[in-house]
Image (cartoon, rainbow, N blue to C red):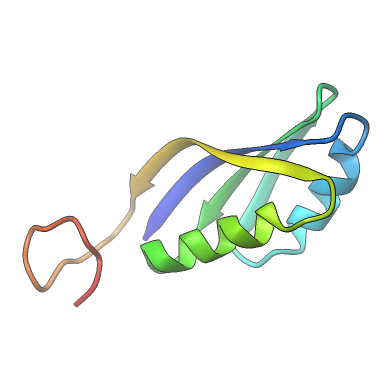
Length: 89
């Protein structure tokens, strides 16, 4: 399972609103909102594609400027097809 720490950059003064909206997205855990227009969150998903889809949902939230990956790791991923770095069977 891919796990990523992300920073949502948003319009100044909108960090609390963005944090509340991000908490509603399945697979997202919000860890804090900074007064400089940033929200710190973790994305957990079943696959890389699901993780990308969640990040795309976050980018579409009102007042979000961008979503940057600060940390990425694979937890409990089993690869059946080889060692090519994908999590597809």
